[in-house]
Length: 228
Length: 275
Image (cartoon, rainbow over all chains, first blue to last red):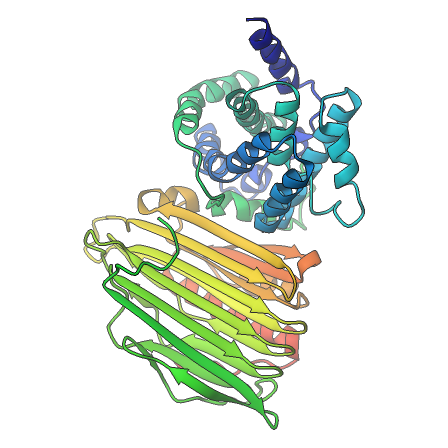
């Protein structure tokens, strides 16, 4: 009971919006979709979350998170997994966002003494690796293992962060009320559960072109709140 | 679903094309194109760079079928330039419960060579199953322009989806892998993933990213196209992804983006290819 409860306490701590993960600086293309009038309703926000963001997390991020969690004690292997994530992160904006969030997580956890974080930060901060390592799902796997979370708890925290960051972006953009956002998250819960009950894909890959293209579009006509 | 060779498939065919530069002109020096592969004679067009040759790939079987296992290996020798395209879209027929089509293309681009591999889109008919893999290797100074596009079509107009599409594109440099692009999508999810667009595609340029902005501008001028640009500067790769409402917009996008990229890379606007 005590080890399990301790892991849950740490999971709640790092999944809280007050935890400085850096994830809330990105909208995953939602801001562009709003600005271009391609998403105009809360149903539209829900559709993007359910049909773009969650499938991408399930088929791409989740695979790297699992691999990193299993390799958390082996710095060399972790770096290889991170390098594979870099190789497969072909959308520059999303890759940049993932690295920024990953670096932020790594930095905070190194400072609060989460096992494994400081050693990997020293490795990933080398000048030739800085723009090719510290991807968010890899760091989530490493840090989750360091916190004593099992892989299921770790992926619960990760998928929660992904959904929260996305919905929070909609709220901060003024397109979703706070209560409406909570309703949307509640409505998405069964879909999240169904996603987690699926087996982890053997190979990482992603096909969410609608949101991905939105995140890639260079907006030159409007001031924007989010980096993607 | 895996993209490896399936020896138990019904029709396993390997083909090969070899281009080389001789005294400033590129020639087709070797070919092995058994049925269903077929090629036209080589063409030359004004304003093409470094003695470029254009070759059209054709299929003598009317498209791809659920038991096809086809491979094409292309080698472009040092300093050579080749434009490889098709005369029309490739129809991927209803697999009718068979394994699904496997298509492997390997592109080997030697030092200082230019390869434009720009097939027309694959048309995924209702019930189609397609696993496609492109494996490219670039030597130092080589440039590769690559298009990959698909659209869904139900000839009976009932909205019956294709079965699945599995795609993998790997770009390798001389001493390291540069990019691995992979996805699997079931036909039932296609419109949800594309935001309602029937067609999706990309044009990728590896070895030279100077054309990136011009590619985006060309895409922006195509009506009914939704496009975004990714620049991987550390690997000299630019990727323009796009979604299109219909095949007309998709074809127009592919032509416009290619022409803009060529103009930016060589200073010469290419002559349109007759199709």
